[in-house]
Image 1: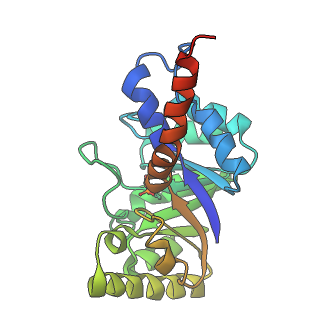
Image 2 (image 1 turned 180 degrees about the vertical axis):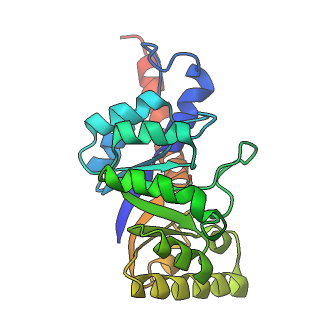
Length: 244
Ligand code: PXP
């Protein structure tokens, strides 16, 4: 399995202070620097979601990442004309189409590909014509996989949120749904990826799934980075406070 690190929440932290001026001389944390750290640590891709409300990643971030990253860029986006035009200029290696709703805290549920076939078809064709590989972020359902296959996308990303949010037998039932979906999608020739809510604990179950090529993980890695690095950050500022 390959790892794509979703760095949206590096940008969330920057926006909390520098929403008006991401290029301020003291703006931090540095989104490009964070991507480079992920790559040096072994990530095989960088994932960002350019939302219509621009709550974290900004247009300039996406263009700069395109220039600077050495692995591959996976751009998550809702199916809107505005973001599609940006994606066609950026030309990431991959685009993952996701549902988007302004009031949500994070991406909730998978994209209803089966219910939006005609709206998605031109977007998929334009991206593929530009040489971008397209993925659909969907629930582990046969109906959504069949619809994605009908649109001739290269990949699907199975939404692991219901699995991540459940426990015990309910979680094992969700894992079985993911397994069945992965087997079915693979049999149709689709590349199978997975993401959402994967953390350092539930990955032990996720890694047993068949046919998964890529995991996209964000929140849990950024949260771990904060707690793992907090002690050092305090030691560093204490050292800087000492008079020579
Ligand atoms: N994959 C997709 C399509 C997503 O929308 C997200 C969240 O933005 C992720 C993966 C990463 O989820 P998490 O931040 O919970 O690891």
